[in-house]
Image 1 (cartoon, rainbow, N blue to C red):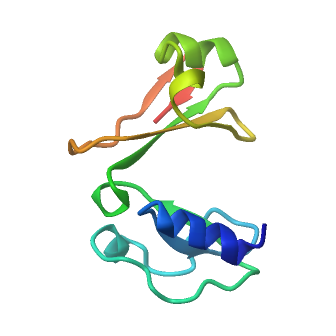
Image 2: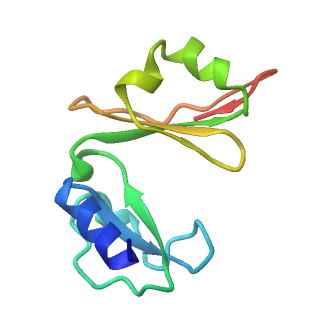
Length: 116
C-alpha cells in the first residue's frame, strides 16, 4: 500500500494525519494548531506520518509502553489483544483506543519501564 493510500485510509477513519520529517518522529509542520483543525495539505511520500490524538481524531488516544514484556500489556489491559489495536515498537508497544472524555498526558516510570 502506498503512503498516499495509507493516509487516505487513516483520514477516512476520522484521524488527523500530519507530516513528519523523513525517517523521524518529529513533525515537519507546527503541529499544535492541528489539535483543533484538520491538516489538509498534501504529505510528500518521503515524509513519515503522524496522527494527532484527541478530539480532532475522534477521541483517539495512545498508551505508549516502553517495555518489551508482552505480559505487561495484558496486566495493564486484560484482553487488550482481543479488543483493540496494539503495535510493537522499537522500545515496546503502542495501545490504541478511543474515548469521548478529555484526557491528560500521564507519565509513569518504574522498574518495568516507562509508560505514557
